[in-house]
Length: 199
Image (tube, rainbow, N blue to C red; front, side, top):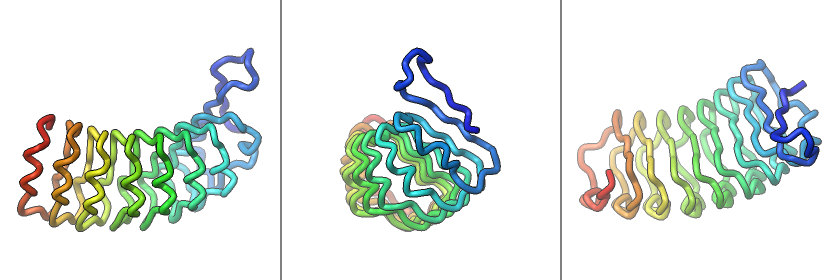
């Protein structure tokens, strides 16, 4: 049985937090399907290769941690998680993301490190509320100009990729405080990086 914590035991309809970290799970327990008010779910460090479609029906979910598994694909139904604020897909085997990820309008923190990503969908530019983006340890050679549309970004981690250039639109990230570029193939930086006065 999952460990379920209710923030108020006297309110049965209150949001729940479920932590199933490091349980050697090969599938997501179907017993979770009844938790319609689930707000936080962590399945960190298991042996998942797929995510069931019913998981994307948790409309109240705000935090989802699927990191350190063996997941190869993410369903387009992820776009239904309209209230999601934190998504951790790091340390998996993802080579691409669905276009519907751009529908996660409330997303603030996105962890995609240690995957096999080479490109981001064009819809990524719709994540206007994103504050933190971690793309480290992937296979990016370059990034789209649409990166500049992530106007609320304060921290961008790009180290340990194969980047040979950065888009000039990076200068539009006026709220950026931290930019991590180590272990890439960059020989020059765009002049617009000088616009980032908060670095």
